[in-house]
Image 1: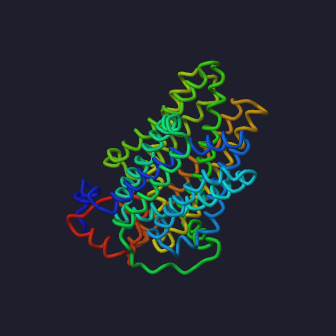
Image 2 (image 1 turned 180 degrees about the vertical axis):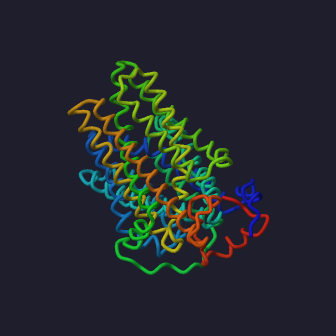
Image 3 (image 1 turned 60 degrees about the vertical axis):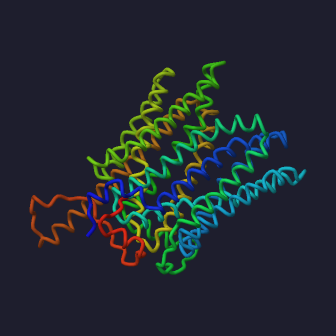
Length: 452
């Protein structure tokens, strides 16, 4: 058996594969954060149409949602390493083509939208492959996987905070094309890092399924994984609806509107990063499922305050607290759900789950715009609060059902007695007999240890 105390220590961060995943994500996400500004600006300046710009950006999200379900079975058969390498190669090539496609005259908009559709199609399998890789590296332990996932999310959040302001400066100095090409270079660098340090797994691929049906069945078979997946759809809907509403909220402050909008977004981002950094310390006192559920309940309470007649200071405070609780809970949610899925089908199931959650996120801005136009921001905040409360209830329901199931099995194992010393708790992690030699080697002391 592994030495838990060593596994929970700093040895986790000495694993080359884990460091490679973190470094690759930080580099590629920084590049992607640059193009969040550069690509819309390029389309706007080339076409002069805000509608064309919106169509191109919407195509990316549509690709993520559609391929996340239709291509999930491919992601399961290919394996996480191949998915990540192919993903970086495809996204780098596609983003490098965008400046050329945007100059194609009357075909500029449909060609660029098609490229961004394929670009987005890679996102759901890639995200799922990252989570599967973390589990392969650090083992089937919820606390350690929560810590590793928090590190990955911290790298992503840091790059997302740094990228857009840097992109504004670089676009002003050099124009959009060099900035977009820098993003392509970031994917190439990520590909080289992953190819060099990511281990090749030897586990046999799962049996093929059509349209991700095996992944859907795996998600629905486990009550906690199923309810938490539905909860993330509601939560993503609420977050994207809120972000879409922030500029409208800021406009209420007249000339200070742009400054207020920037401050609100920046405050949320900084608070979310702070919450991610707190995951490791909090896991010393709380289990990953408890931290996940507690954070989601507190997050819902923050959203319940937003419909009240608030000043800008109170709105600012709500966003800070919401960002903090989101950061604290997001990594444990991802880790606990991932470990409830059989390892052989995990890539396919997580790809489907990511795509469905992002579909909820796509609906958020659409509902936000229609609701604000018809009823105003106060009504929208009520809708978003209900969505987050629903998400919190689903997290609680899945957690409670899991504890009841674990408690019943514990009493059954004891011969049907009611020993008060046997406390219900989360089901133990599934064993993964087919794990690679890399993971087995890490289970020997000194072990290397591993949660939204």
